[in-house]
Length: 353
Image (cartoon, rainbow, N blue to C red):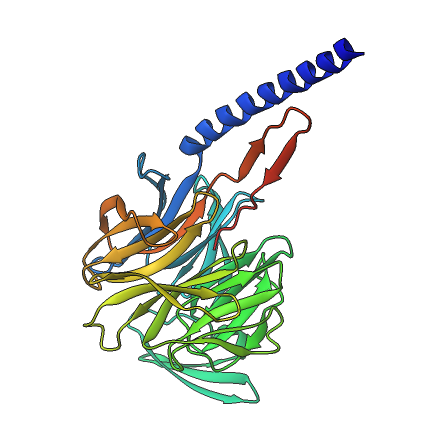
């Protein structure tokens, strides 16, 4: 009987060791496989691109080129897609993670060459407009009054959310761009993100100096944190129940900070202070890292930096970038914890905001 028990424990240990070696090999592979994605815009030539690199900053590669002014970026790792907004063409577009198969998803009205202006009138949350330019004018319906700013994806429910900077609305649609809905009206936001498990939208509102949230359908809007200055970018660590954000002093001449709080708005903490512009912010909760984009000026060279979740251990990941703007992560999320008597596998869910 003792020999049988010993044999069983030996077999369990053998299989655990085998699985652990596979896991470690996969993790090692993942360090080269998983990526940082970001947007870059050259405002002088009005050209932009989507780029990516390994999490350690190596192997920088252009994915999509020939764009005009790509700003926000989001990843659908389930379908292997990258989404982005373009400020000039007023589009939300997507492509394969390889950069192939670029497709327009949501399109707002754009002026012919030479530009112009739009007069907008809104009533009960619905708006119409008249576009005027040198050669004439055009009547614009509500669905054409779109200038998408920041985006977030709910890949399980097949929805894309965005801030419409033209109407100051938060809107959503299906991942193919169909069935556009208005969720929150009259909010001035630079960033939004989703807590999919609790079915919440979070966003920054720079007109009210606040972090706000609502249900995914836009109902039950509430202020979560009232900030001292202008909140800019936003990210969630739902496992640790924390919200992180960047904040700029109004006037843009003072220090910029990264702060965090509990998801109920309590326990606000300063994580780090920086004299550079702190733009897009995202998290690798599995690796315990914050990633962000910083730049010395609005159009100057920029870099991608990271630190531990408490702000310690700041390091440069990629430097010398041409006006990087928004960042998203694809990171490893599987861990195996061995035991002689039982095998426990935990999966850290991937979250790309």
